[in-house]
Image (tube, rainbow, N blue to C red; front, side):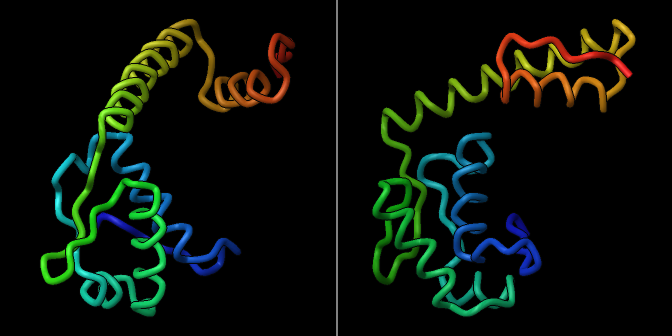
Length: 131
């Protein structure tokens, strides 16, 4: 199963599902034209109400990321803009992966690397001390 929902996060289940679908398209796991499971089928797999899946699908359709075809199912719809964004995210992931590998080779531990990234996102340009 591609998606996993967790009730204990405090985040609505339909939001978790639509974020996971978005993420899967950004990472290239789901591509243009890929068919998602039907509403009832996915609801049974995730053990949620069909309304939860329907709401996520509806919002994704409204965003233009999903094409709902009555009787045929739900299909990923990556328009040109979405495809450019997906390509951009993939290039950024490769660059981040190369940087993380280089930082590991420089002797930094993963928790130190994580703190550096988090600090840079929160306070760009500030130096994080090494513990």
